[in-house]
Image 1 (cartoon, rainbow, N blue to C red):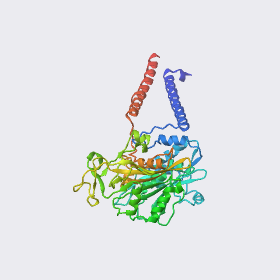
Image 2 (image 1 turned 120 degrees about the horizontal axis):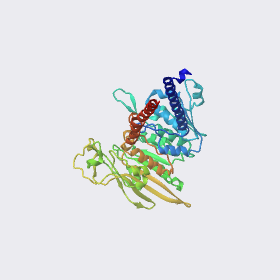
Image 3 (image 1 turned 90 degrees about the vertical axis):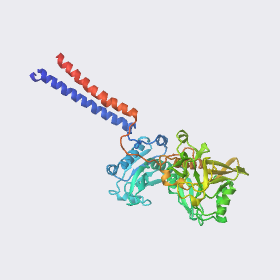
Image 4 (image 1 turned 135 degrees about the horizontal axis):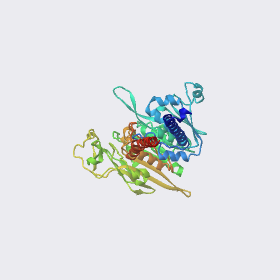
Length: 486
């Protein structure tokens, strides 16, 4: 009792008790906040690019998901997280998917410890750190490399991760495997054309089913809705053109689309070009240039910015924040007719009034040579539609001609300053009549350094510079006053 009655000891016990109570309050508060954030997903992402946040579009999609889906990461989560900051980002995203939907479950399988799992899924070449997304009737395999964008050092041959595509890859895979009938797209090969890999990857991760055909010998799947013909190096025979016409006519039901991309180095293709002119679109020789420096990229007159001439193709987000769309080294297009019989044309993208056409042999540098004159505006992307009636239902078939092969280039699609990827993705969504597609395009991420907004900076400043020190000073002052009054 003497120990307790001693005033100095009593103050010491009181200080210890206050400290214990304060620590206990912090522990309880921490447990409560942890429980609430686990139950109700609350995250503050302070990275400069919002790297660890999933988009509102993905959140809305997950909240409306009706089918059960399991995301299986083929790795130990702790080992996966420690590989790099980008892998930690992917793991964080996967865990957020489960928090925003009761129909999403997440599990982890260590292939090194459970090799039987790979044997059960022998149809896929499963590797460590890959992802499997499993629905009731369909499964999607996402190789780890598909969740990142890389740059290749041509001197060392080494690849470096420059950005993450995890969100668009995961969301689109879920969207794809939960679709009742995905849209089929056929890439028509066999004519020395190009395979537009960036476009193919963009469409695949956004729910389209891409199949590659040698059109010379193979028939496309009867349920194919869109055919891609990209800068063929050989002309199509009359037989192949008849097959294209039959594809577009679709036994009178229409509902088909041919997407043709012209290349700068193509030889004359008289049969194919005559076919396109029957649809009201002519592909002319030469390369389009731009004379206005404010409408070019990298000071290159052959990398012009184009104008949107049909705003119905744009999403609401594109209308609010329109990004630059470029059509580099494009062929000049010409609209042959506005309307003829059951076909009508519409210009979607156009080079500006200060554009012109340069002969191919003079378009090797970034500057215009010779006596080239401006002849703009020049069509850059044109659609021709044919309408008909099958019973009481009106159907359309389309031929879309793009002037620029380089508009689909990887560097263009992955540039955060350009809107090519988003524009072409939405164009395909409109053609396929997808009412509520998941539109997520690749984005280049900055570093993972702290990049808070001014508002957050003010709040944090008030807390750590004001409230915390003030609380400590107030607590000390109260204690000092109590001691003086004793």
